[in-house]
Length: 205
Image 1 (cartoon, rainbow, N blue to C red):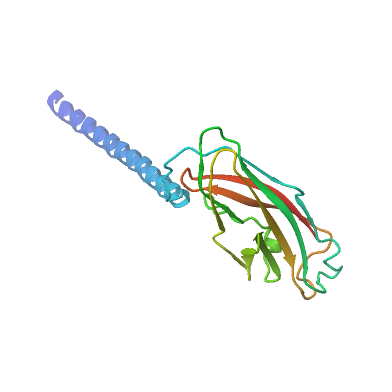
Image 2 (cartoon, helix red, strand yellow):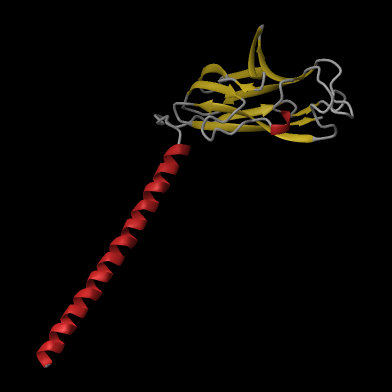
């Protein structure tokens, strides 16, 4: 009889251990699945560009960071005629040793993929462009963001000044919202270092 009880107890212990093993395997599998899902998400938001250098220190400033279109937008949200407001942005390499290579200026963040305009301004009648000498480059036009403007290399001490224009074109009622203030961003991008300088500006309607 003791022998039978001993065998029964042994089978019981084996069952418990097997159950623990299965449960432990399931827990480990759940951890591994969660890790794999997290890595997949991280890869989906991580830029594919591999940094090859250290970013240079850039000083980026507007001479005036408020674009006043309060007289442009009517109370009903319409715009009577194309109206342009522009300010100058200055980009200076203040680094003592490093050159900022292949510098871009753009209206979206290429690292986070964040758009620079508030969504209420992302309409067909909004036109944002740069003016460099006699050359113009659209940053936002026909509800599309461009790939920006390649400034090129900025060695230590180099400085560039660029006009940033925000034009609200003739628009029907309810295109814009009167009396609003929108926080926006323009971005200076160093692709070799995969680094962005965001610069905030405001558009008032």
